[in-house]
Structures are given as C-alpha cells and as structure tokens.
Amino acid sequence: MALKTLVEEAVVEVLHVGGDEAVRLYVAACAERMAPLFIGLRAGDSERKADVDFFVESVGGLWFADRPLSDAADRVVRLERFPELQPAEEGITGVADTYTFFAGLVLRYALLANGFGEVDHAVSCGHAALTAMGMLDQNAAGASFAADEQRLQSLSVSDTAAGLWEASVGAGRERFRAVLSRTAGVGR
Image 1 (cartoon, rainbow, N blue to C red):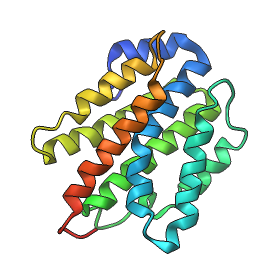
Image 2 (image 1 turned 120 degrees about the vertical axis):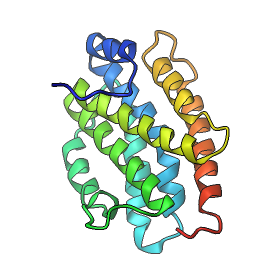
Image 3 (image 1 turned 30 degrees about the horizontal axis):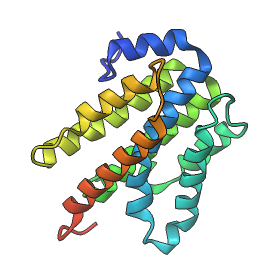
Image 4 (image 1 turned 180 degrees about the vertical axis):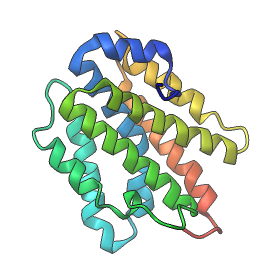
C-alpha cells in the first residue's frame, strides 16, 4: 500500500514523465524554500558553521538541474550525521529544532532525487516541505504557507518555471521570518 502524500497528483504525474531534469529542478526549488530555516536558525552557533556552509553549498549545487551532483551520495551520508537527523528518544520538541529537522529532511530527499533521479525521493522531498508548512500554518495565525508551497511546487514542474528561483528565495525568507517570530521569547 502506497503512503498517502500531500504532493498534488498532477505534480507527481509531471515528475514521472518529465525526466531527470524536471525532478532535479523540482527538488532544488523545494530545498531552496526550506534552506533559510536551517541556515538562519543554525547560523549563530559557531559549532555548526561547517554544517551551515555545507547546507548552503549543497542547495546551490542542486540548481544545476541539467546534471546530477557527482557527490550527491556522499552529501547524503554527511547530512545524515547532522544532529537534526539523528534519532532522539525524547523526540523533537523545540520550534527551531523542528524546522531545522524538516529543512534537513527536505535536503536529504533532494540530494537523493538529484543523484539518483528517483521520483519517489522527489515526492518525499515535496511531502516533507508541505508537512512543515502545514505545521507552520497551524502555529501562525492566518498563515497560508502550505497553500503557497503547493503553488510553488506546481510552478516548479510547469512549462513556465520562469522566476522559480526568485519565488523560492522569497518564500524561504517569509518562512524564516514566521518561524523566527515563533522562537522569539520561547528559546531555541
């Protein structure tokens, strides 16, 4: 039995027929929109500077959608060592930890999809982004981050993906601002 995904059926269909380049563009855009959550929430921790730099470099490399990253598998292995992706008995409880986990998960699936061209990894990447944005909607009054994510996922597989990078960067910044406002006074 297949796992029910939040990614719209039309997007999944295009990913199946669009080829490797369409898959790579889709996951690059998803990762770009989630990147500010990891980068912004971990940038102040001097012990995580190398992780933040790795995250920035990895997301940037994903945008060369005409070819897979030659070291995608190695990047996945390194990313899986990040504290955010390590199982914890007590689970994830903090706001910052929750969203850096989702950003890391999205990047993990993006790297897997980029390196191996697997549509299932791309769909998991989109699903993780939509899940995180659904949670953000529940915790930010009047927010519509999940709807915006669905719209941008559809844009990323359309024939006219013009402006996708700019839209993804802008959406990522808005998400970061919303999460940052949730962490103000709450602790990270």
